[in-house]
Image (cartoon, rainbow, N blue to C red; front, side, top):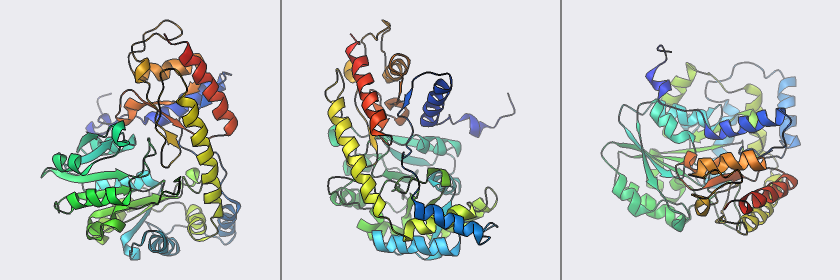
Length: 400
C-alpha cells in the first residue's frame, strides 16, 4: 500500500526471528523440527531473580518509573561497570531500555542523519544494518574473513573511515561467530579510532559472561580510556542471566547522548517494565554462581558440536571463543545437488533444504553478511543438539 513510509520500506524482518517462527509453525503442523535458530538460553531464569520480581509485585512496585531506569537499577548498573569493567559512569550516563535493541535504536535515532555512515564488521548481528537503514544512514560493511577468526583488523578499519563516518560497531563475543577480541586487538583498533574524533563506537557486550577457555573479556572503553566519551557500552541481562523475555538492556555513555536517548524514549515506550527492572537489580547484584556453571555446560555443547560438524561431509567449523553460536562453512556443498536433486546455489538454498529434508532449522550466513556459512545456536538441550547433528550428518551425506 502506498501510505507506508520510506523508512519502513528500507528494512526487512529479522532473519533469525523469521527462522524461529517458521520452525514454530512447522512444529504446530505436527512435523518433527529441531529449531537451532534462536539465540535464547534453554535454562530458566534463576530462582533468586524470579523471587525478586515477585517481591517487587508484592511491594506494589507496579507503577511508572523514571523513563530510562529506576535509580536503584541505574546505581546497580553503575556498580557493575565499575566492578567488572573498570568503567566509571554517573547515573545520568546510564540508560535502561526494553532490551538491547531499544538501546541501539534510540542511540542511532538521535545521532544519525541522512547519509551518515556506520561501519559494521561482517559477519554481523542482523539488526545492525536495518536500524541504520531505517534512519536513512548508510551501513558500510567490512568483510572479516574466517582466516582472521571473523574479526576486524586495524588496517581494515583505517581504510574504511571517512568524514561521513558517524559510528563503528564492535560486538564481542560476536553474534553470529562467537569470536572475541583480545586486549591487544582492541588496543590496535582503539589506536586507529583515537585519530578520528568524529567517529563514535557502539560496543555491544551482550555476551560478556559467556566466554570459554580461560579467555578474559575486555571492552574498548576499558582498554582505551580516551575513547570512553565517544563509546556507548551496551549490555543486558537476556543472555547470561536467561532473561530474554524480561526485556532489559542497558548502556553507559556520554551524558548528552544518554539525555537525548531518554528524551526519545519518553515519547515512545517510556519506562521498561517496573517488575523486570527489579529483577535486573537482583541479576546484576545478587548471587550469580550459575553463570559459571551454565558456561561450563555451554562449553561442553560447543566442543561436541564443533567436533561433530568438522566430521561432516563438506562442513568445516571454527571453534568460537564465546557466546552460544557456531558459524560453520557450507561452501564445499554449494553447487552440488541436495537429496531431491535440486542444485544448492547458495547458503539460503542449503538451509532451506536442510529444513525440508532433515527438519533442522538454522540461519543462513548471508543474513549476517557472509555468504557460504550458516549459524547454529547451541543454546538448547544436549538431546536436541545430538539429534540435530545426526540429522545434519545424514543430510550432508546425501548431497552429491
